[in-house]
Image (cartoon, one colour):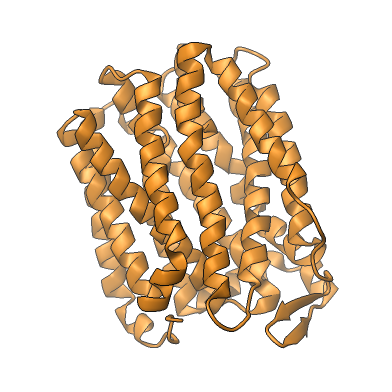
Length: 381
């Protein structure tokens, strides 16, 4: 919901395309730098505590971001809010990746996590569009802040001990000094794992497409004459498709290879962006966003599943933190690059080029990593 509101808020402040890019990118700056330490904190302090702290901080910063009509101060507070939301998401992902019981329970838990996130993405854009149409952007931001705060109040219970991680039938002891030092070194050592390199490549492509969908795709529809409610409905339908794909996680991951699901979903998302500029007819955009949503839901659950399978139990938080840092780096750079290029190149052409570049990246990564993939352990359940 918030990511839809950011470009619309900047437009109401008569901000430039560059300002839109800066404010959208600001959301991801702090998580890009602090994602790994937050992941280490989830390993040490417990994932539930990280969710609690992150949600409260994000809610407060979201309200402060609209307290002054300045696009640059707005971006600062959105940076803090983005850090809080990312911390909550890292904590939630760490909790589900630690599930190592036999059977398909972990896949189902990952599916439920993704489903809950996509359900919020489904209702958020529609609610945002409705609130803007009936009231104003400020009211929509206030509702978003309350929704984020509600996540903190939904956290109950306690994590397992911060010095052990449950791994099936045994516990793996953690060295507290290792958790307090060399976080970055230990996290980047995970890149030696072929599976984790594939996770990073897939994350970069996926988050680039999502970052532009949440920013300049909204601008594209706005410039085409769409009102906020119509934009919100189309984005919500895409999120509903994501939720449906996430709900099928247990079945799909039991029947199909996880790596294949990831590649197919990323290719589908890339092809959609090649089709988006072809027509502004609402039916075309609905079909595009539904296909994009299915790919979004499948790729998210596939990436989380691969992290759970490829990463040692004591480093689950670090792995999630490293991936989050990479994701946020993409979310910082993509809007900034787009915001700069759109000054010189028309937006529809840029969207088409993004789809083509993403498609080439997925195909190229699949070819380059082919030999490494052959050495991976079985990723089916």
